[in-house]
Image 1 (cartoon, rainbow, N blue to C red):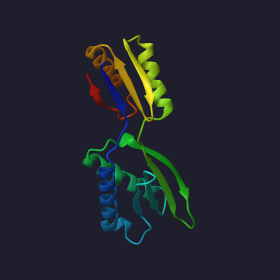
Image 2: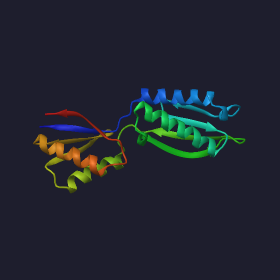
Image 3: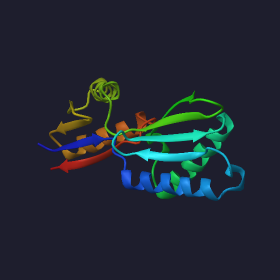
Image 4: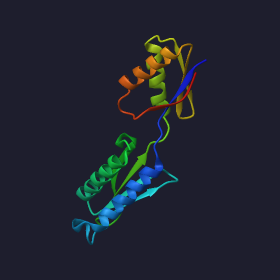
Length: 163
């Protein structure tokens, strides 16, 4: 029975390179000289930590990061931007999570979308991905088109297509 997986996976190597390039640019820019501005990636937690002297500086660092991610070919919709927090003195910090795997709520939304359109396919939620199975390849391609058209806030990709 043909099937495919709907996944939300980011290339952490590209994210790491973009964060390193952001940190390098922060070090060379004149407006960041003598400030606490920095950007680092915690690969284990899949978090990007931005530190600056104020909200405006955090926004500038975030713009640089978005630019570097876009140049690296990473969709910025993978980023789950957190709140700006004070960390003592006049310094602020922002933790941005890198999404990896479809959350249960989003997976249920995809599953309901497929069921609601009365397609001849079934969707099953499996550990951060949604497996869609059907009798015909055409039905699966129609399901892919439907998911692409309806779910625009997540950079979903389809892999493991089996015939």
